Image (cartoon, rainbow, N blue to C red; front, side, top):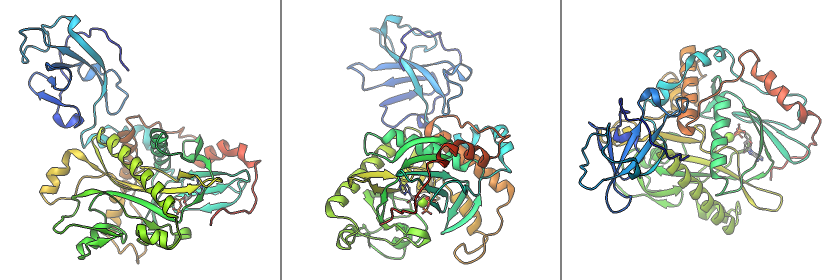
Length: 446
Ligand SMILES: Nc1ncnc2c1ncn2[C@@H]1O[C@H](COP(=O)(O)OP(=O)(O)O)[C@@H](O)[C@H]1O
Ligand SMILES: [Mg+2]
């Protein structure tokens, strides 16, 4: 990352806002000069200069953008407010330089997604991925699963959007965005917990180790939020102060930060049932997990969530809550399965506007699937009535949203697939080598 050489002087300083800067950087900003004072390096303060204006970003394709920076030490007698464009420091006083990814402000993801590349895909959502040549098909709410005879599982993410135990719509490119977000997080958390990933044969497809999935879903939360039957806010609002075996303080408001990170486990409803709240005591009492397994899985989940929280914060995001699924391998080892920190399994809010909106009694800004959910909820009772068809402009906006989520979380540019090949044809071609592996009828559910 670091290449130390003097950069040309600034003639168009990048407009810096405090909200772009990660909280953990002990920096003071002079908005007029673009001068940043870094407090924690050495005894005397140092000056950080961002190099290049908008048109000279080091990596223009990166989203959020990457800029170069220099950290200067003060020359004796130099004032902090000296002209940054022609710093009086000699180049020898540069003590550090490198590149820096600027975390996105709230509106970033919406503004930056290039819809021209997305447009050709809009009529082409992947609603189903039934492939007759692959064995042991299980059609999940969102993903199509195939168990190979050799203990591997193929998981194809379709573009289906699921909520209220229903399928609401199919959003083009969502399956790819989801698979690629999970991939980003699996890579970023490998050191904390073994995971089931073996390979990605296609942008929508995960090849993994088939595990015996735990009958418990591990939900981790930092905020008093949510709308569904197992969410803590609706129960709290109804007067409950004891949920999931955890005591909650009086006087909390919707979407407020909890005094500490909590785990609110639920049953894993196989084959379309409802998830039910559990507690740690109940999990072990009912023999769903041994006490040692519960201890391990909860520690792993908290570690994964802590990593997610820190990395999300560096991108201007709050990881509000998430659901993990773990499984056991053949030796009984605990392995992270399913997906991780995707917008389907997690709630994210924009950090920039959170405090202000909370104080004003407004909902935090989010880019999760609440967008399509809200549209549906405004028009019917999603648990009882038929779901009305989602209009094309909502589908289009949702596609943009999912791609924006991918780009904001990962900092990478979304690469749409070749629009001339229908997605299922492409996936079939990528999976042809597995047709020959075959399968048996054996199921691994316990
Ligand atoms: N490594 C794995 N081994 C076995 N099952 C897995 C593994 N990873 C995920 N799964 C299961 O695959 C399914 C993924 O598809 P999904 O659409 O999420 O289905 P569901 O409707 O059951 O949530 C889930 O049931 C999940 O529990
Ligand atoms: Mg699922």
